[in-house]
Length: 216
Image (cartoon, rainbow, N blue to C red; front, side, top):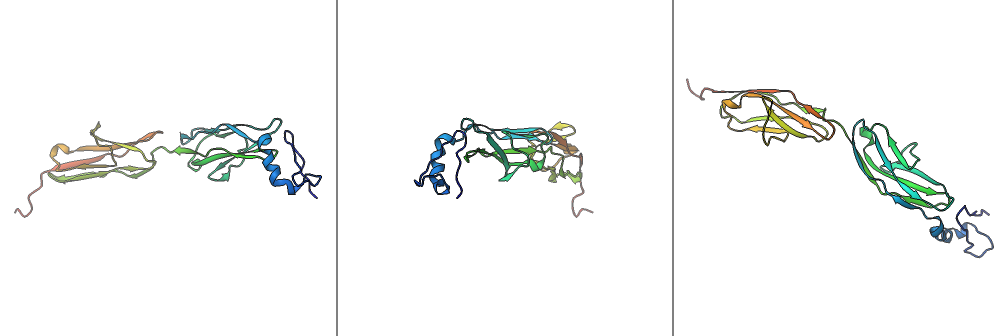
């Protein structure tokens, strides 16, 4: 018969009154350990947002039974992070695959287990992945001009004309309605997130007077 040996700081009980502590006592045995073997998390980890390439750190603090050694295992999206067995998880240089939900599993040698709060680690990439550059061209007076600039990593946008910011032009789309010759110029957009900014190619727009349709 297998017997259960009490660990340091814990006391075993013979719940089935069989003159020994064995696996039949397991349910009550664990329940009796709640007072002596419980783990208390004194500081939960906090979520963090970093830029790609920056260091990231998640920490948890816990106390266990007197004389007990606590073990730690960090998980990302429910899977163990290889080698992450300390109370602090250090990521020297964050990459996109580090994005996820993290929590720490804390274990005492007397079989108690505690789960930390789950927190998010967000690794932002700089907006350098251009999905679409604006395209200029020649248009007639009175036309509607559409310029599109799109980048990855959810940036904010600011449009410029001849190097000067256009008030209120802060979306991926710039629409010029009923264009006049004064709207001719070089247009570009800047995409910015918490990590960096990037500038799109210029789109040169020329607004000209066009002959009326059907006129000889």
